[in-house]
Image 1: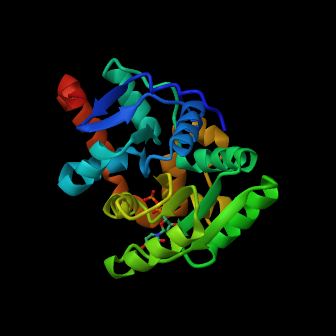
Image 2: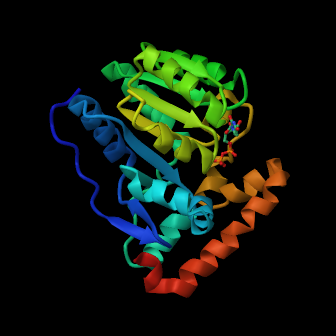
Length: 254
Ligand code: UDP
């Protein structure tokens, strides 16, 4: 662990009410390191996509969770376009899918332990196994599919706390995972909790991730639509996001 203060995020841009931190993967890892060293309670990280922003327009409780999170990273190319359009470009797309392996790599070196919560039964276990093979020395404090249902919360919090994990990764999809973390924040004893969406599925290989060329061309959404066509309804939010940013212009940045 380093004792140096982390590079504070270089600023932020607010897109349709959601604050996004101008941070890179390196900055995120440094921030996690600082939180673990500081040992001052749980810090919440949200990996925000345009879809999150649109859900938050209609869901004030989710908007509040995003606004109160310690860090909101831009996990979605549309947010980078929006930030640039608003005159406050973000340095990098910081996705949960790329971030989790980087966190695991750093965790193996630093001795941080991870708890993988969520996804279908067996998926978190498979993802944990793949990560420990890839990053020898990685400590997985626990895995559990569980569910975001309120009546399971106390049991899940007890499991996570009993594991003494440093970092909790929650894969219940948005907005449930982020609301779940915020709701249990006062009782969770990990240093950091991140909502990671479909990341365990990608690592375990149960859902393929878009090839790099499609990611580079900002077409990851199209790939997801092709392999998970039932998402079409959810994806109608994307044109609404573009329209909202264009229509509100500077207001969108307030
Ligand atoms: N999931 C879950 N319990 C639920 C709902 C979803 O474990 O009640 C998991 C699902 O299996 C998947 C993850 O949540 O692994 C998130 O999926 P998705 O790709 O929809 O994430 P998003 O696009 O919302 O980030």
